[in-house]
Image (spheres, rainbow, N blue to C red):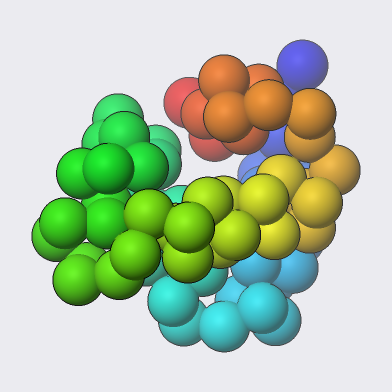
Length: 73
């Protein structure tokens, strides 16, 4: 299943409520970056990136990174 336009806007709103860093992380995840690549490019620890990704999964009610990506593509 994919987000319809209204649902996509709601999903982005939910992520935006978490903060701008979450949106940055989401963009990098959607572009195919690994946690390690995100960690390096944003100068964050790997654990911090994992926490951000976990928060995104929870906020969007998805079970995996692959599911997250499939919803937006």
